[in-house]
Amino acid sequence: MKKVISSVLLAMMSIAVLAGCGKQAATTSAKKDVILTVLTNRTDIVSTDLKKFGDEYKTKTGVTIKWEGITDYDGDVKVRLNSKKYGDVLLIPNGIANTELSQFFEPLGKNTDAKLKGYNYTDDKAVKNSDGTYTTYGLSYGMGASGVVYNKAAFKKAGIVKFPTTVTELYAAAAKLKRAGIIPLATNFKDKWPLQEWDNLAIPMSGNGSYYNTIYKETAPFSADKPNGKSLNMLYKFVFSGWVEPDLTTTNWEQSKTDLGQGKIGMMFLGTWAIPQIQTAAANKGDIGFSAIPLDDSGKLSAITSPDWRLAVSKASENKTEAADFLFAFVNSTYANDNGFIPIQKGKESTNPIIKEFTTSTKLLYIAPGPNGDESDKKDKIANKAAIDFYGGLYVQKVAIEAKKSKADFDKTITELNTNWANAKKTLKY
View 1 (cartoon, rainbow, N blue to C red):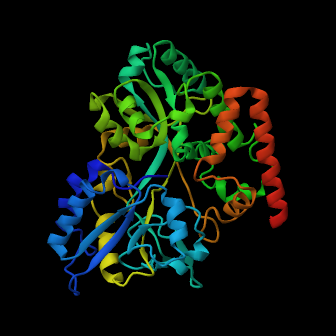
View 2 (view 1 turned 120 degrees about the vertical axis):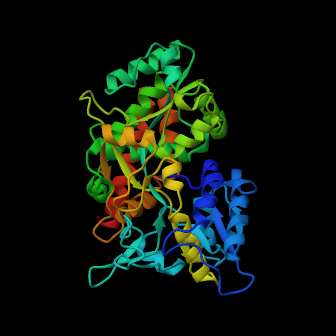
């Protein structure tokens, strides 16, 4: 789930972080003239909100924060990991196996340590020790949930009283939105990464938060009766019915946020992290709602929750102590509560009204790490061998293109995915 450091955050967070965050609060550096390079995927606010936060942090600690925004974060940072020029604090790129963590990142401690035992998912981006503890390398600032961000005013204009709780009602609502001149669902096809939500959707489709731990056992996971296949068939329904953007190749992520906020778009499948960003673009903040995506006609809603990006200290950093101080200060800020995340701290509840409403009406499926501490180790190896990009949305793009043509073209693409998966699985002997 994505993305780090929203624009709403920095204006509110800089004071909260620097005011003190318990034992892991920012402290004055023992070194002089320390400069920390912090890698972020938020290129849109590097010179504004992030710069302001960095300035505040320097005033408090004496440490200079140099933000580096990266557009293709996963792609570029994975390459840079081999150059040893990947900053002091960074987001762990998707697809890095837990067995590789120690090559690139500094351990934050054991999950039983006083500074870590109060957080969830300290055994996620971690390596299991012989005594049953975990050495933690990455720590998230909050847990996100996947669902649908929608515009209540747009639904009202289309004659829809409340957000659907069944898939039949969801399709009916999409048709009504289109008749009202509103784009029912924005896929953000061109930007690719939002299409990852169609992979996320497979987990609640399965009813099992650990589904991706065992998907490597499947020989044809994209078939219509399987969780991934069910998700892609929903995508087919929206695309072929014309319930998405008219021209998939010219979609624009930043513009789509404004269009959803103003009611030109009815829905987007995204994580809770997107709520404040859409609210910022909305004509009326109260128009923005969030719900689990209806998956069947039972009326029961479920959604996944998992850590957002995990922050880590670079093994190549020359200022590891200061980098760790910064990491913990960020994690202990008000970011989760202010920006649509479920707190990563154990026992802490969100006071965000949208999040509270969502969590009380939805069964949350917690994504759990696999037996080796890496939920997606075997899945990623098969996917890499089969050239199926679960994280970047590339294969979902192809599915959407073929879905727009015909059911036959869509079915052909699904068959190819299953064939490539099965061949890779056989080669790897899983």
